[in-house]
Amino acid sequence: MTKQINRQWRLQRRPVGVAKESDFEWHEDGVPAPGPGQILVRNQYLSVDPISRAWMWQEETYLPPQPLGSVMRGVTLGIVEKSNHPKFAVGATVIGEFGWQDYAITDGASDFLMPLPSSAENSPTLHLGLLGHVGMTAYFGLLDIGKPKAGETLVVSSAAGAVGSLVGQIGKLYGCRVIGIAGSDAKCSWIKDHLGFDAAINYKVESVFKRLRQYCPRGIDVYFDNVGGTTLEDVLNLLNQHARIVVCGMVSLYNDVGGTLMFPAGPNNLLNLMTKRAKMEGFVCLDYRDRAAEAMETLTAWHDAGKIHYRLTVVEGLRNAPLALGKAFDGSSTGKLVVKMS
Ligand SMILES: NC(=O)c1ccc[n+]([C@@H]2O[C@H](COP(=O)([O-])OP(=O)(O)OC[C@H]3O[C@@H](n4cnc5c(N)ncnc54)[C@H](OP(=O)(O)O)[C@@H]3O)[C@@H](O)[C@H]2O)c1
Image (cartoon, rainbow, N blue to C red; front, side, top):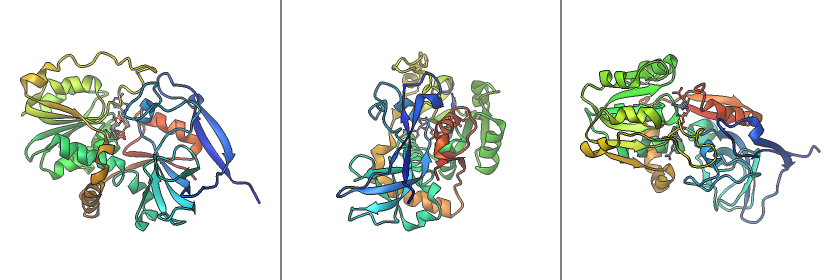
């Protein structure tokens, strides 16, 4: 009988700039056996998230730094292959932080192990995108922190990305005027013509400030920030009284920090927060785990009614996971980025 192999990507060194394949080590091991109370999961899909790059910093983010030599952290969706756990039967579909590897052992103590409904077998990627942490991020970030109201103007950056494309659509469902900022004409057409955004700005070729002034004649009430940097600065100059800025992420910074938290100089117009009585608030989707069912129920209903759409970019093979992470930063992915592992 052929011996089963567990293929893994381990973090070998802290990258400088965009992570390269040589920053990781390819490792092959035997498949471990589950102990008492544990299950063996065979990973099928890996979620590729830009924040992975920040986990590689030597400083702590909202999670401890990824230790060198360890299997790269990442959310995966897989099948239970062996079980010594009363709640997880063999064949069940589960999701959790099982890492860049074929197989993982877990008892659910520290990796957010969650069972998925049996319907997940037919649409596994839905649970890494719309009905997973991405959907929760868009839903709670926009509704709990952004608090959009009908008639208000909502701006979202990385608007053709996994989170941003959902945020804009939810904003439309709440009656907002929605302006998206994205990095290509094709992405701008997609969010405008297919997702119903009111206007789109290609930040790579247009002046974001000029276009925002044109498309937001009554100012900006809610900004859902996925990128930070100069876009945040442009938005700060156009805020309305009592505007809300949702700090979801700052993808434009993740590669620039260089191993120590030496952030480049930030926006110098934060005074606008005072003059406009505005709020800027960060959040992490994990804070909303207790309310996950609420988001899933609503997002499922919107999706089933054809009111919300999402797109996937699929990279084939665990071997290509480092390359896939690069796609989160070079603009070549649209919607949710995943690796199909086997
Ligand atoms: N707070 C939370 O709990 C939470 C949870 C999930 C995600 N997030 C954050 O939310 C943001 C979006 O996440 P996501 O998973 O949906 O990823 P995403 O938006 O799909 O990320 C990939 C896209 O980011 C854009 N991008 C890359 N580098 C950029 C740069 N330097 N400047 C501007 N845009 C750039 C690219 O699109 P373009 O072609 O448009 O440049 C790329 O296709 C990220 O900041 C992420 O870290 C936060």
